[in-house]
Image 1 (cartoon, rainbow, N blue to C red):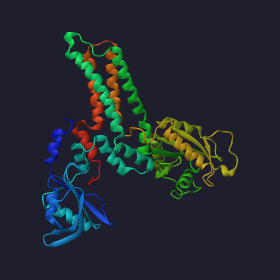
Image 2: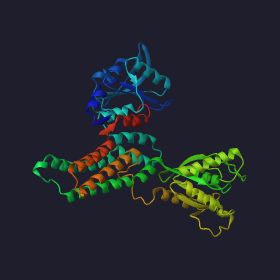
Image 3: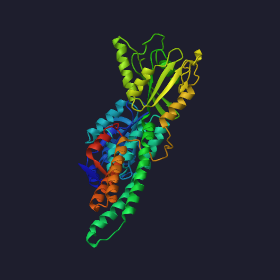
Length: 461
């Protein structure tokens, strides 16, 4: 089932149940906020609220002090915020109840609401209603989850820009250009008997080329956007005792991993996160790779190989006391999909560095060379990108796939035009490309896609 526009869904949503959920984290705090949305939200809360005046007669965007009652028993002193449709987050009548931050109080109020024909919200249902009521498009709705999940300043800025419609506007601009081209081709089909020409073949191909160039620029931002959003997986790899755990500890500025002169000390993957100039790096300290008959150590070595496979960047660590392990380096090259590897010589505080050239020489003991390593890690993460969080960035795999499909359909349309084929072929491919762009912003969306997106949200958002 595909949803075109949202008009009939808006009617459906408005007739749905009124919903409620806790909008603040579980646990004790200064306040808890309960969000209520739907046709009966204001009147239902009014029935359990006692304050100055009636909530049903109150203006939108007003706050009212009073008490919530369960029969004759006071549940809590609260502040109630009123938001009337369509000027609310969901586009429906909405209420937010601010209570003291005791889970017992919040649960009592939620229970009281459910006894008054309000049901508990599903994950992401408030934002889903906002989308279906045209308060935001689908890329903006997805950005809400990204804003909540952001754990660096860079990822937060990127998510905020998407929430503010930066990507949406770019996609809508491309869609409008495509619709203009498509309309010329379809007009020619309507006037086929009169042999009227609305657009020359050369002009049609030129316009398709221009749109494809714009889509290519967006596709090129995906690697940067994914890095800003999800961070970089970094595997610290090497034979035992080259200082992998010492390096991890120095970067983290804490003794996270056990350091010992005994080979095989690290048996399992240790995962930690660090932000370097706004970029999240997920560091995986792996077990030293060597031949071993120890079953537990072997399992750690297997996991090390998995970490190498999935790493965006591998730090291949050696030290001044041992020879460069060419066989292990070749194994890393074979395992790692990205082929993004930095060779590191550790323990330079001991003296001789040998004749082999490494990308970085450092000491995890004294810190010499660590800044160079961090800068190299950042450069590898960003590559030659000139993008910034202020650019329209693609960071979502769904958006990337839709753009790729649009590009494929445009290539078919261009080939048909180049081969002077019938306008029916060109028109179908252009329309398919338009639908791919429309799917990004939610104008054409399958129900499965919507469910997949919003069920990943937290309850209350």
